[in-house]
Amino acid sequence: MENFNINSKSINENKIFVSKPMLELNNIEVIYDFVSLAIKGVSLSVPEGSMVALLGGNGAGKSTTLKSISGLLKAERGEVTRGDILFMGQSIKQMPAQERVRLGIAHVLEGRRVFEHLTPEENLIAASAVKGSLTQMKLNIERVYSYFPRLYERRTAESGYLSGGEQQMLAIGRALMTQPKLLMLDEPSLGLAPFLVVEIFNIISRINKEEKLTVLLVEQNALAALDIVSEGYLIENGKMVMHDSSIAMKNNPDIKEFYLGGSAGRDFHKIKHYSRRKRWLT
Image (cartoon, rainbow, N blue to C red; front, side, top):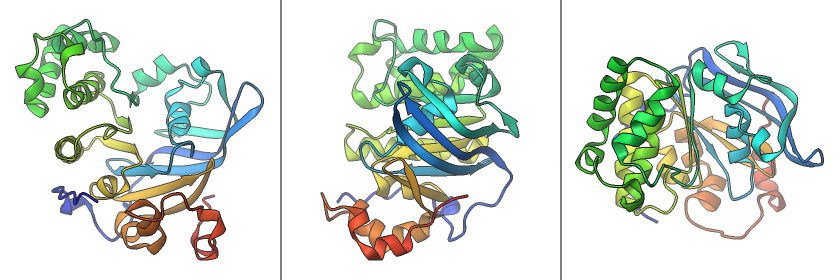
């Protein structure tokens, strides 16, 4: 297992971040095609200015949880059928996705989705159409380039010819162009070499620290994620089964065994020790 030495000691404390919540999910359920129950009674809280990880394996419900927040479920014939979603104290459960963006929610989807026929700079300009003036757009582009100087170097190339890491940087940069209050990242490490994961996670940590931007990070790479967040949630089979500080989760023997290197293919729910540990959220 690669040892991720990410410089984030200042945010990795042995306490759960204490602040007023920017985002709250209260016992939500999501159904696809009026039949398939994808997530069941999920609750979580993301404090303002914090970085929080949502961990879990393939099909656990991580991406569905993010889409319920950003409003992208409808495009996939999904619906929040129970519970509520609060952003800065306001219910957004019935709000269209574009209105959620205007409120300050940015969702970087899995798979580094960018306009491949456009240059990185044209991608950033396209994203800026959501809000802001021409002057603000130029300032935002400079800001993105300050975090991702490699994008500046490749600003005139077609985005389809960028490397996977550069495309991920561009996807995050596009989200920053909307001047978000909450940045949600879905598997930003997927398919990237370990050194690129370290670089991108360090930049995310820097953005959080310098701009107090709230981050909700969905990851299968638990080791890298827990190195930069203050707390984490674990979702399994559409249910939230654990919530603790990042330090406590890294030291938890079950998290170590199943997510930090070992026991591939074994089932959490068959282990009594794990069942005694899991903590349902209310």
